[in-house]
Length: 266
Ligand SMILES: Cc1ncc(COP(=O)(O)O)c(C=O)c1O
Image 1 (cartoon, rainbow, N blue to C red):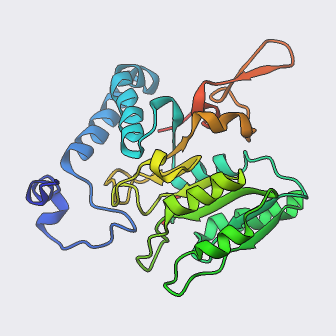
Image 2 (image 1 turned 90 degrees about the vertical axis):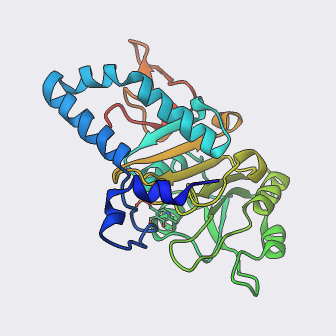
């Protein structure tokens, strides 16, 4: 159980205002502010790489904490500068062709929709929108009827940006498993607000942001990718953070989800 009074006492912004915009960006807690300003000061004093080396344990703990938050493993987590880039890293790594289909819902996040259209234009894959049921959530019967062997990906926003809808993620996961599709859950508005368990949900990729219900800083996001799904994905950019050059004309991907990440980050 969370102690709301203690959390409020830890959050300096609570002293002077009632701030309800956690779905935009939440108020920072004092320990977060101290960690950020302390690290910036350290970077200014000893250099960015040297400060990162000193913070190694804390950074590793962030991977472990995110893994615990979603019910996965540290090596399945990679950090990003926002949820959109995390989502893009996963989405643009899904091999798609003319025979393939992406299924998504009517309450999908705008950037995700744009990426679907772009992928459809580039690859010839079809994007099909599953209708809502009478409650306004994804119609599970319609999804089950539309999901077939052509379905490469089912993409859903767990809690859409506005409106309070919570999609039935675990039921969607069952349908994805039954048809063999990858299931990518955008948990940007649910991470920190609702319990998440990637094993119970059955998703293959999950993305989130730091600044909303996790009360982290802006410019932070994360991607979790199920280890078993790695071989079905072709990471969209090889760079020195995601891959190691073999000295000739080849390379090997970084371990686990790190193959989707970038060398430089905050
Ligand atoms: C459902 C959903 N997905 C993705 C995002 C994008 O997150 P970010 O701004 O961290 O890239 C948002 C932002 O509000 C969102 O509401």
